Length: 494
Image 1 (tube, rainbow, N blue to C red):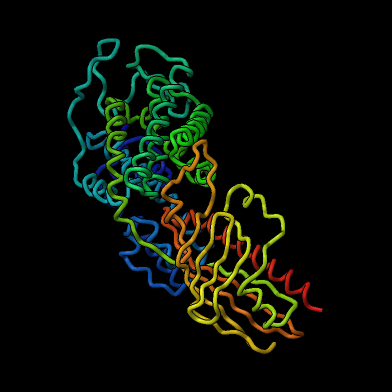
Image 2: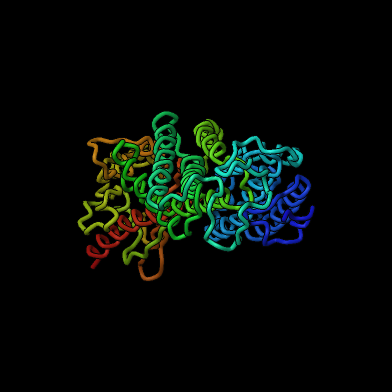
């Protein structure tokens, strides 16, 4: 039975499900109300914790990277903000799917809420279109009956809570295996094709690639898998997991990327693709049935690559800072000598360095003072670092600072790949170190507080996610250098 007008506004538990109609007044009213609530909460929290005035433009900006600047000051705030945003995204997608069906459009249109910029166009259109009152133009089912209109009670009547549901218009009930492999192939095809277009044609590592594409791939697989029979969530879970693993294997085989980057992307791609799978399954098995879902499914697959054209609009870059500190049992003049140029590091590198992440080896310098050039050698090559600040401590009571820009840098890693010499675009400008410094502060008893700092930016999006990998990696590089300087200084100090 259809819901009464505006009844959905009074039942928050109904905001998350893909079942039942949503009128344009309900859609518009709930959308505005939740947006105002979310903005008020975010404005208050961000102002209190960071002092930043969170403008309406920053709130409406669909690119996550635009928020990296003020969230970077508080990593905990960034995580809380992401977790806080997830329910609102789920509501927006759910309500858009149901509103599209209520307006006589394919419910798959609602999935484009996951495409930045396009989501505002979708919301505007869905807020204008009236409820569809026409009749279905679908072919007759196997019993000679015309398929029902959207939201009409399905026949036969089923228990919405039961897993046992069968499409009354399907010619027969397929086996799980027969439905599994085509659904698997669709998801793999979407991820690999869009990945190739994004990386090797447009040279973009953006939100569409790492967020929207796995979501659509999961939705397409989940929807196709359940077109004729509603299989269990456990089988859907297995389908999405296998789809991601096969997609990664295919990406390796076609030279799309290396194993290290694919491994780092997995924690982001898998939950998003499973969320998409649940929505795709819900679209084809809920009371949205009554029109041919395959048309919308195939159309969304064809339109997804076009969303990549929006990626160049998101070129907001933000410098991120990483500081690491050690206490050295040596005076500042002795520590300075090792900071400027240190001998080869002989300590065993950590496992992630042995896996391919570039590790520091030694440092040397040509000339002294501002204008000199320092070379910090890594396993993949050397950082060329022109000196911009040279404050050498002469006595043990003086502080010191060595500042430098990064003129050029080596590859950040050596990728694991079956292809010799594979060079994905992200190795060139995905991670860029901009400048750095060492600060030496004298402490009592002839000790020195040594702090190493790196400023970098990332051109792989969403940056809030990739910072989770970048910051600890830079800390590890700092620690390897600072611990070595500490060891050399303390071993030379009587």
